[in-house]
Length: 110
Length: 113
Image (cartoon, rainbow over all chains, first blue to last red; front, top):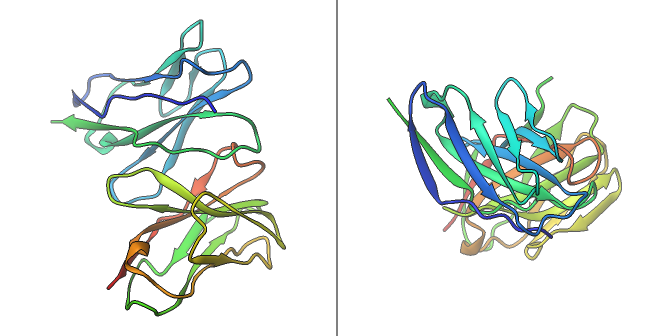
């Protein structure tokens, strides 16, 4: 399974873009990159996923480098409610388990 | 849709007691999962089910049992509670495989003393 590496924490100012990095240098061609987040004491929440192309939804944008060895989750206008742990997960296949590491703790400051 | 619901929200058990954590989903998902999350750590898969009547072990199944008699319900049983089982337990479901988007419940916080 491709492993992911995320810094332990970062912060950003409210209203600014939050760019959360993830390295997955051993990713293979058919593996998707998924992002989930977990707000304190709540269950994880799906954010977005992608394979090769950049993706955008109402929550965030996902930028995947051309060589697919890294990606960035972008929250365009971070709010205090976006303070959470964000997990970058590489999905080996439709029937493979999601492995949640420690993630990156994003703190949005007023 | 209520999504995934879990009961109870919080429970204190004495060592050696048993209990069942309840999980119900109303999305007609075939796949359901139980995870545990220890403080400051990621989630670890305990058991999962690919459909009614079919269950399989995850990475940390010892001390737990599950059953799946209906599509909607996936209870987790602790037979002899131990302090090491103090954790937050999350149930999740997905439409297809484990790697597909999973929808999580709010969690059950368990304290074993």
